[in-house]
Image (cartoon, rainbow, N blue to C red; front, top):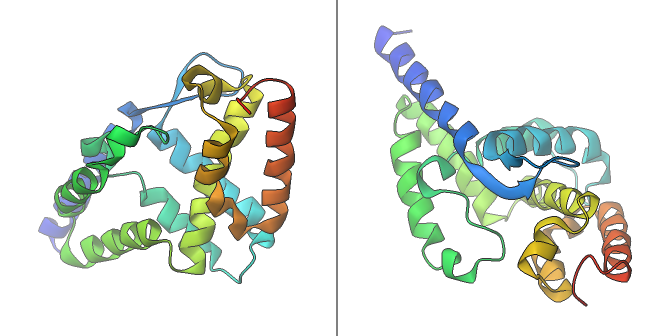
Length: 195
């Protein structure tokens, strides 16, 4: 291995430390502090590890975890776009692709290609692994919002229909989807989300 390769890898590792500074809208369960994107990525990787048995399709769990660990790295430059921010989504793809070019470009070419490929796969949602990864990505904020008295759903006045639309990827794990549907029914009955 060359010294230049190691320097590129270390530069990338130092750069992704910035992900810890990217705050999401969702708060930690039972806490006032907003979650950062690095914490989110770690937590949903654990979701994939624990809930893989519920996937509707056979999946390579290690591949899913790799995808989840890199899927939000682009937020270092692009920021975290709130899930229900229609205006923010207008240029989200452009901002994130530009960020992917810069950040993954810090790596040696083979690792740039691998990690960029994982990010692209997650975004495309075509493979069983990407679909399950997106399930995990959507599940955790749902649990946080429910356990925080409606959380950002309530604060932003998000409707049940909008939440259902956003959570469509949870269908990659039918038992988890049934659980979340019951959770949303309960949240609506408690007035935590708009009907």
